[in-house]
Amino acid sequence: MRKILILGHGYVGSYLYGKIKKLDVDVSIVRREFLDYTNSAELIKWFKREKFDYVINCFGFTGRPNVDEGELKPELCYELNTFAPLKLSAICQSFDINYIHISSGCIYTNYVKEFTEEDTPNFGFFDEESSTYSKSKHAFELGCDHGLILRVRMPFCDRLHDRSYLTKIKKYNNLINLKNSKTYIPQLLDFVEKIIQENIETKKRDILNFVQPNPLSTSDVTKIMEEYKVSNPNWSWVQFEELNCIANRSNCVLSVDKLKDKYEFDIMNEELAIHSALNNIILDE
Image 1 (cartoon, helix red, strand yellow):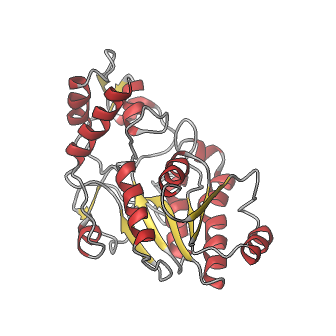
Image 2 (cartoon, rainbow, N blue to C red):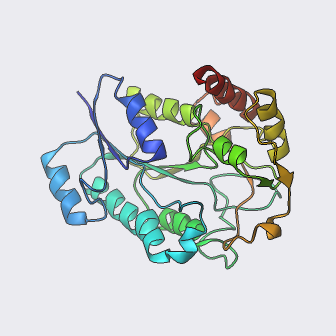
């Protein structure tokens, strides 16, 4: 029986564990309190004892309540988003383990094109205007040479989870009307399941944008949310400068051609994904 290790018990990690444990595999999920995955010696000791087929990294620093915290805690941001994942990737390579890294597509900005995996980030490590969070995510990509990196943006799910994009939109009074690529978590889980079920190797370095095609603007999303009565009567539209954020934000559209062509994954467009998520939220209520 194949052995799967998920590191990080946060938003994506906990959902992924719920999905993978239904498969005919031996899956474990580990919190940092149990295994300090920033400590190479502990990881090596663990991997010598346990023979894993896939290691999936779901830990990282996103900041609470948002990425502005990265400007206040840059050392922790880089430790969890760059240095610890790079050590983990290198250790997986030394043990010949398939590695999947849940990362971020927030390393591009502007609307000159749909950014592909081959495009050099313009909101990353070398860009003065980018956030510490975005710099740390790009820095990992620059140093990693083992594993499949899945770029996720503005994730949302079919629950009113506090880390879901839809929950945040519902909670915020002041919104900015911009178009951005987003990730529907249930489809991300389906994709990881496909990797495991089909025993697809993820040892060679590869980067993949995992977002929904045909992204909507914020106003398009709120209109759909109002249809389902998952809305906020205090919504108002503002400019980014009015929010007094510490860090700049990434606003962009990512290409999903590689996801569809190379990995042959049937990705749902964003409008359908949002309807699917809201349908399930209503059913839960």
